[in-house]
Every structure is written in structure tokens, then in C-alpha cells.
Image (cartoon, helix red, strand yellow):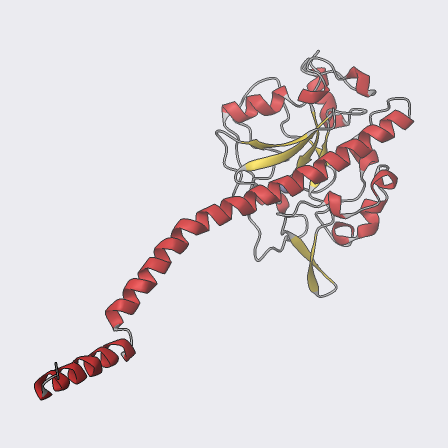
Length: 281
Ligand SMILES: [Zn+2]
């Protein structure tokens, strides 16, 4: 059947209307809806990405700790089971330049020949640096050694004298608890790190609400990288302490003013720390 003229005109109008509809731009409302959906999706994804980043950095920190621990144990193995004290492990101070930023200081570590890498001495989350030769330079070391291992310093002797711990000159002396429960290295807080001697409390025999003298870092989500005396490394999450807060400006540490802020641990964290610090008498 032959179409009428009216049908032709109607068909033509419909096609034109459809063409106009398919060519027109998005309205403002439509764009806002799309932007809102993207924002919701991003908000859902960002925390997951943040968590993945924290986890990746923690794994890298544990890898550093494991390598430092194995080098320490290899040194002991080659030296009649001798347990180095902190200053033998690594000299210098990261509280002032030039020692704080010089790679050569780290290279003098007795364990360096077993490592041949300066990077393992630095936690990937440690952004603290000092101004040297006109620019901010990252510290060369983020970790310190447990002062209750090796020949006791005057500080460490306090907790030997008060009957808490024994002096440990040889690694075989790490009993009660065993080496898997006594830490060797700790990822130290930006506000307290100076020399490599980590000494947390004057009196570790009881909880007194004393501030940390040397504090663990909170850089891994209020958690700290530890290396234990059997060579394993782990990230320990704190329960009743806030170690997030860092008092440095723009990543820059003012030489020797690091201890202006140090937090107080809660009793649970104090107990965990003192139970993993030395060989009990
Ligand atoms: Zn770390």
C-alpha cells in the first residue's frame, strides 16, 4: 500500500527529533550525578589503597629488620656467639649533622660487611631529615638496638641492678624468654632517635606512667617494626599508646631538640614492651 503524505511527514519529524535528542549535550544535573558517583566510588577505594600502602611499607620495613637481624646473628656466629652492644652495632648520632645524614657512619657498622647496603638501615616511612649543605637530607638510620642486649651501658645496668634483667654478653644467654621473644632492633620514633642505644624506661620493673625515654615509632599505623633475636621481624600494633604524633616541621628535625615531645605508654603497652626487652633474672 502506498503511504500517505501525512505518514511521510510524521516519519520525517520523528527521525529529526530522535537525531536532535541523540546529539544534545549532558545537562548540568546529569554531570553532577556522574561526578557524585565517581566521588562515591573514589571514597570507597581510597581507604583500601591507603591500607595497601601501609601494608606494603610494613613489609618493606620487616624486610629491612630481617636483613639487619641476620647480619647481627652472622657476626655473632663468626665471633664466638658475641652479642654486640648498640654502639658496636652502629656508631654516630642521627640527632645532628653531619653524622645524621652521612652514609659513611652506617658503613662503619660491624654488620655492614654482611649487608653491603645502607638502605636497610632506613625505614621507608621515615621522612624525618635535617638541613645539611642547604637542603633537607633524610637521616641515614631509622632503627636502634635494644640496650638490654650486649655489654650493659650505665643505663642498662639500672634494670640489671634493680633485679629485672640479666646482662647478656653472649646470644646463648637469651633465655627466659627465648630469643624469639626478645627484640634486637626497633624502628625508633622520629622525636627520640639519636644514637643507636634504645633505652625506654629508667625503671622497667613496674609501670609508673613514665614517659618513653626512647620511643618506638608509630609510622606503620600506630605500629612498630621489631627484629627479634632469633632473626624474625614483625610489626607490633600498640594497644593503649598513641605513637602517631610526630613533632617535626616539614619533615625537618631541629638538631638535638628531638625529645621535646615524647608520649606516655599505657599499662598494656608498657607490659608488652618490658616483657620483650631482656632476659629475666
Ligand atoms: Zn618501619
